[in-house]
Length: 568
Image 1 (cartoon, one colour):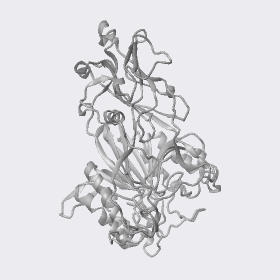
Image 2 (cartoon, helix red, strand yellow):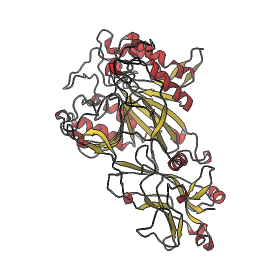
Image 3 (tube, rainbow, N blue to C red):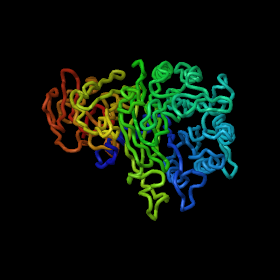
Image 4 (tube, rainbow, N blue to C red):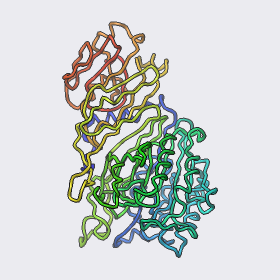
């Protein structure tokens, strides 16, 4: 099942707002960056708005969203044009001008469509000329204003000077919000064309660049809490069966093991790619089963939309068993905004709410229509939100499995889910066999914490740190599954009469920023106080106190930010 529903009810909207927009007093300097997928124009252009196989009429609409969101920079994941000609690549640079003039950096890298042509040296030299920012972060507006985005730029020149500015890394942000970006270009360059089993030749492979990748990701040295890795090709794709590892998914297992281990061991939570023109979140496991990381394949910003290949196809070589599907949406146009706020990274996926667009000569709604080849005005809406926190944990919960695996501790605070099942029946469009059934989606439940210091305790009278929890709902769904959340409280912070009043327990913030009874944000149910521990069978809205164990609990169907406190 594709993502078709939006955030329909105020409960989940509110809960997610609280989760990721916590009061500024508790955070340092959050900032945002954008990600956009492949940009290719592949059909006739009767409106004359898409020169050089570049979908300017689509890019302009996505650019406006980034500008309005106030992102610091945008990264595009390759395939900057469809034909890779020098003229087309110049048009893509021009299409990024509104971002640069708005003070927003634009970083790109090559995809396979940049590298097909031998008459321009596989686009390598032209890319370096057009995107000098990949070496120094420098930008110039049309009015002549100069500015820089990022620092500590580095390329694997020890491997080859050819890679200078093609593969590159840089840092952005300060303190807790500092992040490192490692961008990998493994495409052919003049004098270095390595044939492999697929029809996509390599240049300097992952194996060639792995020492540089590992060095740039080294969490002991990088002085950046967060790190993101990007390439055009996925580790395992949905439609395309070639991979980042110079072959099909069964090839170069040693390269794959080393790469995934370097990501996992250095705290990289998100690997970002393109190539497949589909929104796909997956957990990818290494061939040896020792490492895993979440992969995003970015949604299309093109007139081209792919369908996922069925799992039984021989050219997957059985390797799709290493992929756990989390979310999928196809046949629409979308983009991503990443927010870094202290230890927490939040991703918002926005896409056009119409969708069902057709590809290539049939774009947008079928061949032979008067509007064929004319880009519609998109209405972008938030389709999905997910997150991680460096001070929290992540749990994979399959359909039918219990959320009781979710438990976490921070300082003296401790939280756990006591009960609840992943009752989702959502599936993606990836068929298990030709004409078969889609894959059930697995939920990634994430926890995180906001430390509340003693002065904040005194002001807000909290008896715990603040827990952040997300991932219990279907993508874009509302409400979540019903679950029982329990948190430990500090009895020293409370009077005995307060505990017994029925006005003390698990709290969340309302739209005015006040701490309220957490069950008030539920979708349905009735608030019912129980002076005692939770017991199986208590209905939605039940909440209570286990005095002996110093714990509060509540039966909920929303996620967000939670703490223990008195409510009014």
